[in-house]
Length: 266
Image (cartoon, rainbow, N blue to C red; front, side, top):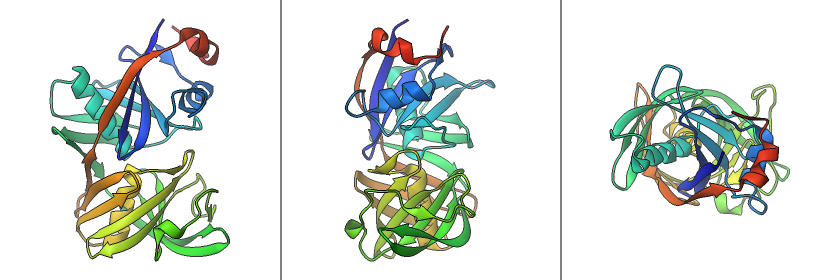
């Protein structure tokens, strides 16, 4: 069985998409790590299996580049939606994507994809440690855990190693965002994602950063990530994320290389 792939990114948060509309593939952690390897594989911050949901519609089966499962990925779901429309698997421009964090409504326009992200719930105050410096932050739940830390200059941080955090507050790990406010409604942003390391962007992290910046208020925040500009809107009932989603390449994974990594081939 040949395995096709598509490479895409949302503000340079990049993913390998593997179409599996008939649920024939069992892509486990070993295969994910190999495929996402930037030197020996295709390379990506994560892998998305394009699957069908048991109740109908499309399921985004997302794994981080280390093979671990993730509840949601805001940039990933936008790239996922772009692929469904551009490939002809989905004829509508507005539809629902199923994720481990629940249903996410998406709207695919010519240049931008918008996704309804659900509620961004502010949590307790906590801290992150970067190269021995303790930074205050706010926990935010966007279907997955985040810690948003305001800093004077995001570019001055050394994120070559994972930030420390309070495991009692985040027993399953946490995505840590660092933000520098550039205007009342705009921030610059860097992120260290659990399971992937520092990435060029993170969709749920962008929403978390906007929610923490608004500090319980509502509005739209422009978030400039290293990979490009996005917009997160926080309302009393939920949040949306808007930004570009780009497909850059497609191909076929060599079966001789992939087969030994797959535990089951149906």
